[in-house]
Length: 256
Image (cartoon, rainbow, N blue to C red):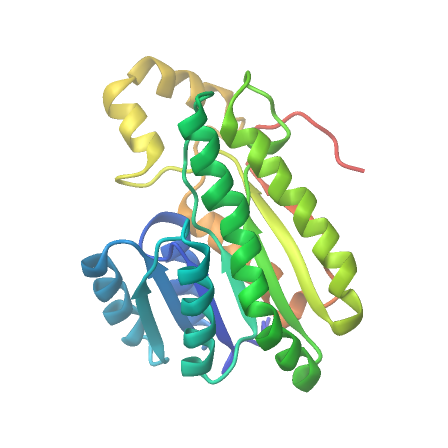
């Protein structure tokens, strides 16, 4: 199946490791030019070098997602450097699960405002791309924590806000053929990630999480990337306002 991504231009925030890295690599493998950002310059440079080997244009930069003005400037400058923008993936996350003010503020500034600001900066470029090709997309990486309450915490509540905002954007911009969707992963395991740390330092908690997964395993970043890239691609041109759950059936809710 041809996803129609060859020659497309994409930006992925938080694209040096884990889910974001897998999304960037999958987009590049499908022939899209890709730009990524993260806070660590060395990791950005390594990721850009790896993406370039796939024969596409790859760009990278350091950006603090919590700095709205800086993020907007980076998005706009990078879209111009790419020669346009067809796809935005807002992947960066604070990954804060506490109930203290610091956790709430971090999740709000990065998970919610980060997506808001990235989309605002990308919108003129996405709109222009949609005028030319009939399709452009923004995809926000959320979480099943948005709908699976595990006590009072910042992460799930603000991931829910992210999904709600994306739905509104989808309806607002559908007429311009700019699609907005969210992906809600379940538990995702990769070296250096949250569940890797839990496995090392909280083995009982990790064992319980594994037992809750009906498939007997956690997702890989590639599992999430495959779904994200399909949803972001022109192959999904009539899919907008959707929250796609990619969790191996760990969540119990039924979506109608």
